[in-house]
Amino acid sequence: MSSQILDRSLVLDAVRVTEAAAIAAWALVGRGDEKAADQAAVDAMRTALNELAIEGVIVIGEGERDEAPMLYIGEKVGRGGGPRIDIALDPLEGTTLTAKAMANALAVMAWAPAGTMLHAPDTYMDKIACGPGLPAGIIDLDRDAGENARAIAKAKGVDVSEITVCVLDRPRHAEIIASLRAVGARVSLIPDGDVAGVIHTADPETGIDMYIGQGGAPEGVLACAALKCVGGQFQGRLVFRNADERARAHGHGVTDLDKKYDLHEMVRADAIFVATGVTDGALLEGVKMSGDQVCTHTLVMNSHTKTVREVWMKRRL
Ligand code: FBP
Image (cartoon, rainbow, N blue to C red):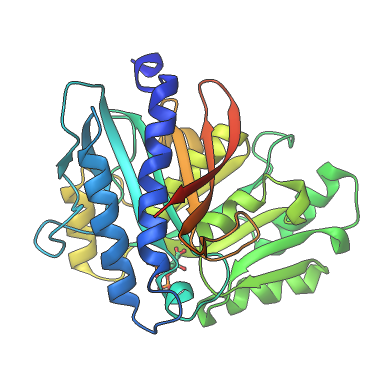
């Protein structure tokens, strides 16, 4: 099944979907309207998905059916006649970044064979990640943040002062940040966008060695699909703030609410990961419009073929 889904032509199909979402969101960059930007990306992504010869089911989407009219969890997309795939998507990862014309907003999606992605509820998740080439089990969510940074430093043969850890800039992370600074690690704070934060651990050019902190569980699944393609380690544990969130998790088939998931439990088969830049960022350039021409920059990765491609698209409007 995995070779069928990861057919080469599907990779380009996936690229068209995030390109469409990014272009639509770009029109709303800097307009101060997060909802409108997200809606534009959702509409464009849904239209593009429904043109494809796939039998897709949204497993990570815009929310539950009763609260999201489009791209809700369980929605079927595609015109059929193709492979059955699980789709995780975030049409606009960084709604605030887009509304405020800040760096690093992306349109993101991942595909895997039907039934192989964690159906994560829309709750928070504690996450820790590092890039490839390190001993298995080097990071552990149940260990102190500073201790994790120390372990990575030891494995890399450097002093912990040379380790940089990416963390979402949130008050809830004060303890994590203090723990990292106490051991002498560098902390790189990001305003939003932890899918890119996790992916950065796998790209030496970013200088990020580890990601840690609490962010969206859906974003955790998307980040895992990316790490599946480029290598690295990830652990995640769902975080519940109330009984309703626990009930949602049960509804998604989660039986062990305290489970610590690793990368291969979050995405259990080969995956395609695709992201197009909306605004310029460390991972991708944003949409550019010049005269009657639009240009996009997309990263597309396939864990089956172990390929990572950057796709530049230019189109006359
Ligand atoms: P949105 O694009 O949905 O706003 O998500 C951005 C994001 O920063 C994610 O990358 C991250 O997982 C989540 O929000 C963190 O949530 P919160 O902003 O509530 O701390």
